[in-house]
Image 1 (spheres, rainbow, N blue to C red):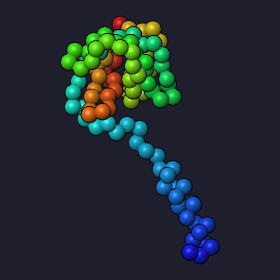
Image 2 (image 1 turned 30 degrees about the vertical axis):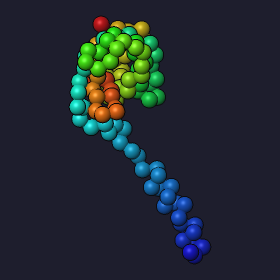
Image 3 (image 1 turned 180 degrees about the horizontal axis):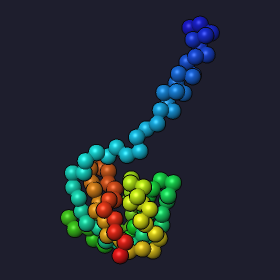
Image 4 (image 1 turned 120 degrees about the horizontal axis):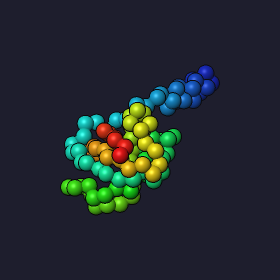
Length: 103
């Protein structure tokens, strides 16, 4: 490898790694479930809401867990201690909230 090639290689690798990834790639949901719960914490840097939810019929018992909220407009509706209703979209191992309403 020539010195010129050797010096160019890190620049090419850096450019390839810095390509902006799409923000959200979970695809189409395979299932949708209704959620009702209370927002305990918000992580705006990741658009994640920590929600203490009631039983999600057909999917999960009551618990506290983190839910990604990919749409900025949906995340903006959330406030800590707010009671919400939302749709949990599920695609294999991925899940996220949409259709958020604050009660």
